[in-house]
Length: 178
Image 1: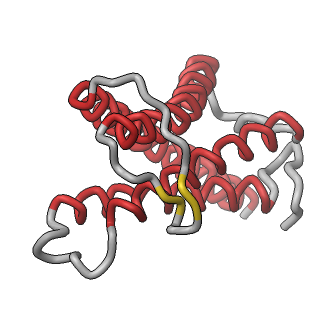
Image 2 (image 1 turned 180 degrees about the horizontal axis):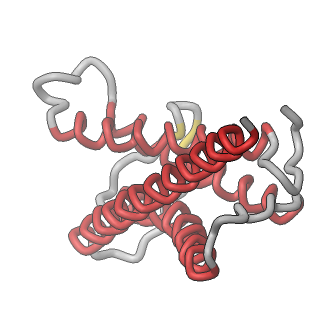
């Protein structure tokens, strides 16, 4: 596998950034759920600090991914994609980037509004940014995450559809040769 993107596939760096962000988002959800039960189950480590630190890391990784995306060519869309599917995919990708920037920022704002210490992996304090409205920020943060999950489901369904159609097309091509 090549490092850079080609016209036919994403390179190793793009794929690595994609999957690191996906796994970080899954970890974020688990940590958010664990934080609610932290007094009884996970009291041994600070789930909130870890959640905040990974959130800030996601913010940085998304910025890196956006820069990387603009510096590299994008693979061509699959030939079996219809124009409306390409339009939907573009909107979903744009929404992903918007959400992956907005969710960590609203979390940062929420931590600042709650006057919680915001430490990056216990290495250093992150400056506070404040707009107020703790309850509203918490609701916005959760709603944005729920939208992200809905789009991720749509993304997985689309990817599975195209993966399956390519496999069937290859199988059909092989059968036609025989």
